Amino acid sequence: MQPKVLTKKHLLTLSMDSKLIVFVTPKSKKSHNRFCNLMERNQECIVEQHHGNKVFLTSANGRNHFWVNLTADNDWEIEF
Image (cartoon, rainbow, N blue to C red; front, side):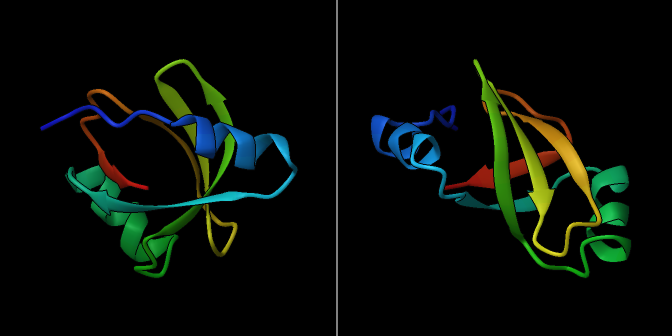
């Protein structure tokens, strides 16, 4: 599996004060629990911050906030 990288287009979107939307899929038991109970099984998340190979996400309903490693995350799969 190739690591996910934010492209110049994604970074431009972030710098223009609009929110980048990504979709996540739970991989671990912990993330699956949060996906079902906090996120209401909605894969849509908003990128709040981007630091190196990590992004900080907020679920669409605003009830879950979490970091995802773009290169190797044990809990979440992310799709742009």
